[in-house]
Amino acid sequence: MSELKHIEQLNLVDLLKEIAGKYGVNAVFSTSLSWEDQIITHHIFSLNLPIRIFTLDTGRLFPETYSLLNSTRERYHKEIEVYFPNHVNLQEMLTQKGPISFYETIENRKECCFLRKVEPLNRALEGVDCWITGLRSEHSENRKELPISEWDEQRKLYKVNPLSNWTLTEVKKEIEKYNIPYNVLHDKGFVSIGCQPCTRAIKEGEDFRAGRWWWESNDKKECGLHN
Image 1: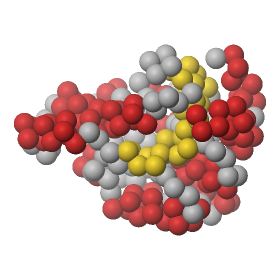
Image 2: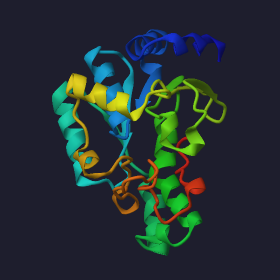
Image 3: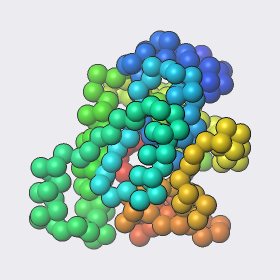
Image 4: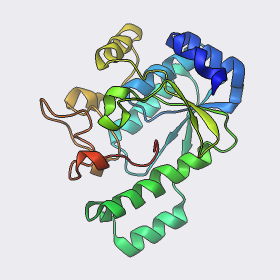
């Protein structure tokens, strides 16, 4: 992990250049098309860096999310790799438990998240040396101590969270500065956007993650992507 410590002193653009120079195509960025992810996508594409960008299509995304994926492709004239769940395992779950089993128990919800998100992510990260994310420490209590760089022992790769210390205000300013396309649901109270059945707009004063899996307690609100 020592070889990446110095990147904590770099700004976002220089950090991405450093990663691209060190890892090339063996560095990937996973985007959920959030505010944060759109910023990182903008700089990777604008700088024409060799870092590959991919997203997970769970099959349950909002129409607005698909629209943003398309407008992002058109804006930068670049491809974003799309990973889908394993259809055999997904078909088996839906056949046995129905289409909304995730509302019934936490175990069912985590199973759905694993099949639709974690398994495709693991495939996308095969052979990768550096994984870039758009996570911020403000996102949830679980991410309060989120480092800029860390070693992912399970996947045997470096994980870099370049926006870890950014505030939401800084994120919005960056979006405005570069006129970066973003999900219009953000303007309707959706601050954290995932699958349509599991996401709602938040109310004034609610926690950033209150709109995700709102029927569960806050200490269980992770899908397994970043455990």
